[in-house]
Image (cartoon, rainbow, N blue to C red):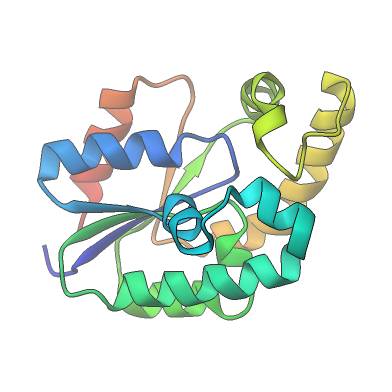
Length: 175
């Protein structure tokens, strides 16, 4: 493997953190869950930080922690937040650092089902009362973000694959 980092990205609820944890155990790499690192840094939940400080302040902190994580010399699997690649020059920086950037492409219906169950813990979607309104929001958001996600070196289609199958597919594509 020629690169130090494997980057896992995609829309919220696609399974980035779960996949990264499994890859970490299989490959023996370190794991950085960007959202968890941010919470450690700000000493509160992302949801609380959003409510108090807003998204712009959150994105500034996110960028700093992303850059610090990507500069590490340790072999690391980094699971990004859903919006991370879409702000500032984050995606350009990610692609300069690694050839192993994986977009986990999950269907709109699957994302909506997963997210509706856990919406209370996600600041961007907690106010949605119906699955239909959430689906409409996710579709619009995906439309805006997909251009960034598709810049990844690899696209992994979720298509109801098991965690093991998703990880094996990623491992088979690592450069």
